[in-house]
Length: 298
Figure (tube, rainbow, N blue to C red):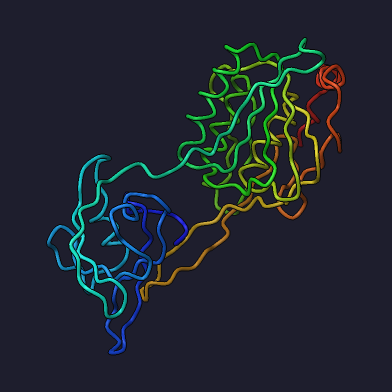
C-alpha cells in the first residue's frame, strides 16, 4: 500500500520508532520531480508539523489526510532533514501527481492503405479511462480503421478502471465479468451499460505479465467477440480481496471472491490463452471475429 501516494504532494509516509521507542513519521519515498521533491523534501526526512499542527504521535494515515487538499492549493510542512540535520519549513503546492498510463500512435500499414491505432496501457490508475478515451477519439479522427490495445506487462491496478475501459468496447447489456464468492453480495454479473466508443476490430496484446484488471479487460473483449488476443498466456490473477486494518497499525488481506470471464472461465491460477502467438493479418482478424460466437452459458 505504501507504493501509492495518498498525500497529494507526491510523498509516502512511514511510521518509524526512534531510539526511545517514540513513533516518528519519515518520508519513505518521493515521486521524482513531484511537488514535494521539487520544493526540497528528501527521502528520510522526518515530518514534524503540517500547517502549524504538530504531527508527532499521529499515524501516517492521519498526516496524509492533513496533507491532502484541492489541486493548486498550498500546504506548509516542517521537516527535519536526516537524523541530525536542520529543521526547515517548506511550502508545497498540491498537484495531481498521477502520470498518464496511456501511450498511443497511428500506424500506417500495407503501403499506407491501412491505418491502425496503437494504444499501450501501462496500468489501470485513476487517469486510465479518461486518457484512453482521449487516445481513442484522436486516433479515430486521424483515420484509424483498426485498433491494437497493448496490455503486455500491465499487472493491473484499479479493477473499476478496468471495468470502465471494457465498457468502451462493448454493447449495452454484454457481460464484462462475473464475480463469485460465498457471500451473496460478491455474486454479481457486471455488464456494459452504454454503446461502445469504437466498433472497429481490435487486437489485444498480452503476455505472462498481463494480470488482474488487464485479464478482466482482455477476456471481456475476447469472449464478446470484440477482439482477438495475441501473444502469450496471461498471468492468472483473478481474486477479489479486502484489506482490514488491525489495532497495531498492520493489516490483513482477505480473499472474498474471484472474477470469472463471460465464458465462465476462472481466471485465477489459469490465465487466458491467446488466439494467436504472432500478429495475424487484419483480414484474418476480421474473419476470426465474424466467425466468433459466445460459448454456451452454464
